Image (tube, helix red, strand yellow):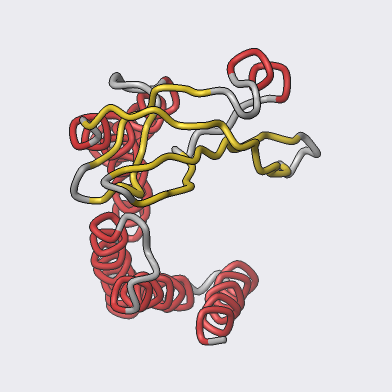
Length: 203
């Protein structure tokens, strides 16, 4: 219930920030989403707890900087905005493309259990594959976080077939199918670098 309430408040302040053009509301929204990350970490509801903690700290700092800048009018609003979004893209890309590949070093066999559909804003559908596997006498069922189009998914995976995956021995819920960076992770890093560079290139 608390998660739904905080999510509602986050969306409320985002809409309020958009309609009033007041970045204080955007800062409050960031503080709320950062607090939600902390709550998920404390309650043990996050699969990748380290990432959730870092994102929580990042959103809180970003939110505080946004509020202070909006009230004091230091003239750094654009800089904070660009660095904030750039930092998010950079972290996600580095985590998915570098850190996750490094920590997922234990090779196991997994059964492809099917995929969960996700709709896009343009009406398209992408599919998130799930795998079932056993590690140290315990069974897990998780996704790598990858998404595929229907045709590519059918070409790559067949239900109930066995595939090699790699998991993090310290947290077997974290898995990946390849031990090299994905194209999506590289794209996120590139977007992050561009966003972070904008304030410096604009000078």
